[in-house]
Amino acid sequence: MNEAAPRLSPQTLGQITARTGVRQPCYDRAALRPAIVHLGLGAFFRAHGAHYTEDVLNRSGGDWGIIGVSLQRPNQRDRLAPQGGLYTTLERGPQGERARIVGALLDVMVAPEDPAALVSRLADTETRIVSLTVTEKGYCHDPATGRLNPEHPDIRHDLQNPEIPRSAVGFLAAALGRRRAAGQAPFTVLCCDNLPHNGALVAALVRDYAARLDPALADWIAAEVRFPATMVDRIVPALTEADLAAAEALTGLADHAPVGHEPFRQWVIEDRFGPAGRPAWEMVGAQLVSDVAPFEHMKLRLLNGAHSALAYLGYLAGHETIVEAVSDPALSGYVQRLWSEIRPMVPQPPGQDLVAYTDALLERFGNPAIRHRAWQIAMDGSQKLPQRLLSTVRERLAAGLPIPALALAVAAWARYVGGTDERGAPIDVRDPLAAELRARLDAAGSEPADRIAALLAIEPIFGTDLPVHPTFAAAVTKAYETLLDVGARAAAST
Ligand code: CS2
Image 1 (cartoon, helix red, strand yellow):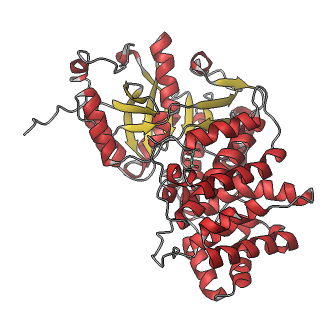
Image 2 (cartoon, helix red, strand yellow):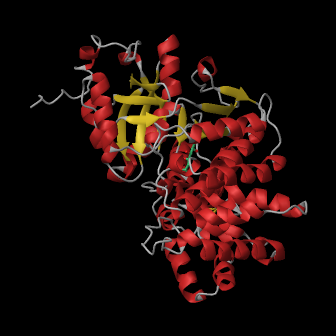
Image 3 (spheres, protein in one colour):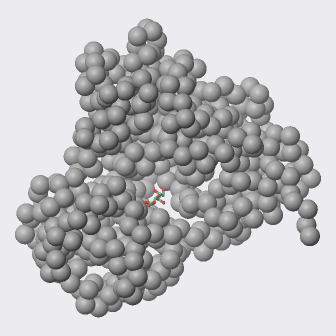
């Protein structure tokens, strides 16, 4: 039997050097300060934002260390703490797999274990940037309007207990309140979630929340705190057992928290940071621009819109992953038609060609080394549909243009949240509105038009305009009927 490999840690790192091809931190980790606190320490950030920062450190040193924060569960901390924050990233492309060790992460905090400690960490003037990847639902807002949902249980809790919050918005406001009270400059808030106008959106949510506690704090936030917008992109599937084995095979060390990711990455950042500064991310490929909006439209609508459409149709058609879905000619033909509907509504960002962009997307989706589960992307559809698909729907309807492929994507979501797949097996529907979706469908009965009307009536998803739009409801109902009649593969082929 093989001996167990030693665990990755600062003490064992030296054992990798004998091996070829594994990049390691080549800067002085002891010089790092907790300058960035990142809320939402998932696989995505560890393979994206932390990777860019790691590249800057490798290139030019500095002290931009990262404290990662889990807002819910302790798993990441439990896996990373014994490794001194070190982890392996696995870049997976058609040419094979390359491992690298990331050292920028200094420590992991688990917010619910000691919320006051996190508020203090954020309020400490060493914290210069607070970045976030808390997923769409983590902002406790109404996705159709972008407004704070004051009825959200976490927001209600935080307004009652502002010093020991639960929500990201509550933590930001509590810490900014402390900075203000102490007469200190604020940190910069860097939202890295796939939300439209993410900087302005989070700014408005934090101000709205703060105003309910202390209007003067809301004014101070409006005047003093920077919330640059960003567009983030890298396909990073959730951790699997196979990743653990792959990391160990490449490095010779056991890592309980590796991350597999595609080679491609993009980060477009609004260059609007306060005197607290930022790492020189532009040195390592990030684009610092004055207007992120065109890049964000391109990415949210063409990448994420297609991802969601492929996730629902692909899942229903029996495909486990995105690569399987786009390897099915029915679905790859469909996604091209979907992109033809979306592209005319997306202004071309500087230096980007949209046809080349979607061609590259098809290659990325078809990367056989990335097994991104349709089920993972299908999650939280109520929070994703508005910015990924429905904003394009609105613009096409306003221009009098047809929406067959977009309507099929919405219908596939409706079919998916019905909770039973095409072979009659139950679907594990994960969504913050899952109970409401279920209740509405149960009340609607079995008529397709009634089921679609019941779902379209959910205002936080569809607003007040789309449910009463005659073309929209009719197009989605028709696509839904086709899905029921012939199944997802055949529906996607028509
Ligand atoms: C995906 C995204 O899970 C999802 O909903 O669409 O995580 C996607 O992989 C990233 O945005 C790619 O940058």
